[in-house]
Image 1: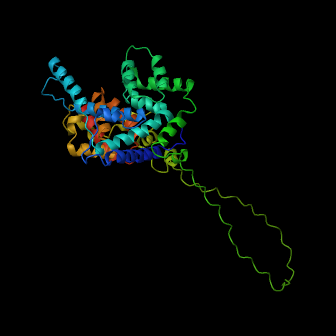
Image 2 (image 1 turned 120 degrees about the horizontal axis):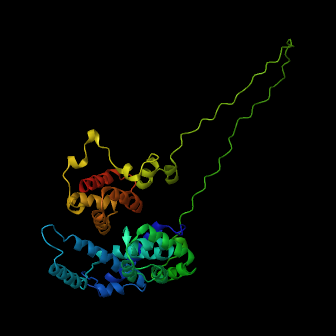
Image 3 (image 1 turned 90 degrees about the vertical axis):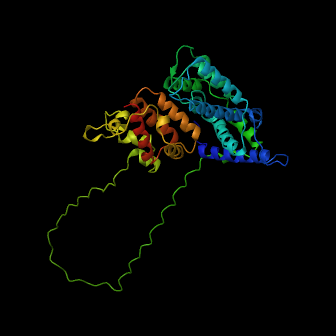
Length: 386
């Protein structure tokens, strides 16, 4: 990734552009106060097709999460007639998109920030937009997600053409393969400049608007003003003293006092240590990450004995707890919370779920000082896999 461009500033520009475009559209004199957007209107909302496609992709992910919540242990959702009815329902609903400005604007802001990443961070784009951060994916799934890419699509298409459409591939293998392919097939040098030019026509944008702030150099220390001793007014003659044998005193320098060193991870981050880095830094040698995440169990009592086993995290999480997780762990993103819980529910065992929490979610959302909420989530995972 080109680290000189700030992620925070790209997101800030996305919010500004979304506000600017929504103000032009929804506050136009001809628009009623209750104006909404449908699917075709979203696809032509901006002249940059990539932004529009990313808005639609977010809607699809939200829609999939909403449909997943319809499932119930009391009904057979796998029956052919039920599946057919659900498919028909989803098709009808997809033609009834209706977004107010309040619902649309944050989706548009996110889409603008994600469009920057297509050319600045292709590997992350491949992970989040094609792989959808899933542990496994088939070539068919990746090709289906490819329809939401427009900017520099040839890079992603070229990599998929190198894959054999056989069985699902592991996420780590796909990401490593894509990174190697990207290094051998770099994007054109003017890719970012072209995108900047298109965005500048919508809302003024310069490269300086996106650059990371340069660190401020410390001011040089000022020399100390030591008092100059005054010369004696008149020399004093001392009486001669008898000669004495010289005494040699050996001075041994005292060892310098070394300030206690902060852990490397903490020093690099200025004290705000992400959860996944803290777990790795504090883990004893030879201890796996899943063992580090495993909570202490006093007197041999398991968490499963303290609380009843749950069939799924989605059903076990209360409404208040859900809002707490969304706000504290997922930055207020309801859709991303549901996608993560759905993924956790699909994993085969507790160790895999804990690794997903530590290696994927904690790193993606930067869970700093979120131990209280993370521990609540881990306890629910223990109950599910007890």
